[in-house]
Image 1 (cartoon, rainbow, N blue to C red):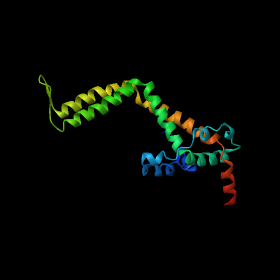
Image 2: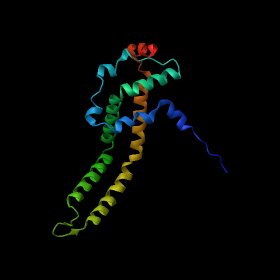
Image 3: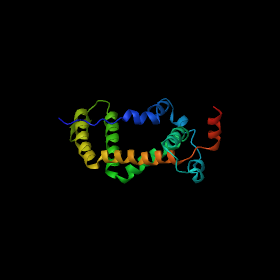
Image 4: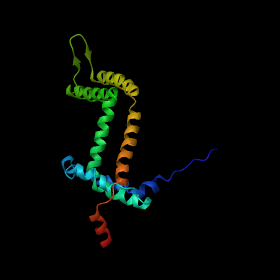
Length: 177
């Protein structure tokens, strides 16, 4: 019997306090979520980029920057998502096919589709949509796109958060406490 390797995921993720960061996002509307976007000159301030001295400094920077630039990071994630869909056009088509098919079948409001030469029930239309979209989905490889999106956004967002130094004003406010 092989021993299972147990990774202390909770110990790693609890240090960055990731789960509580997303709690406030669920209750906000989109307009209030993006109302605190920081200017691009502040988000990409090259003068504030430096290598953290140790892990605790990197952790402090990540904790500060994830909350301070949270809207900017959401925009980065959306831009990477759009890029992922535009580079995988078959996946984009499959998503549009599913959304359009569900919308079209919903517009029938339970009635059969009668084209004159063929009559299809709602369950037949859903079955046809599944029979077309599922194989297309497997060919489009959405798992690869999702894993790429997780990796790319993780590198971009956590890399920016770790290397972007806190503003001088925040350093003085922390010392006063």
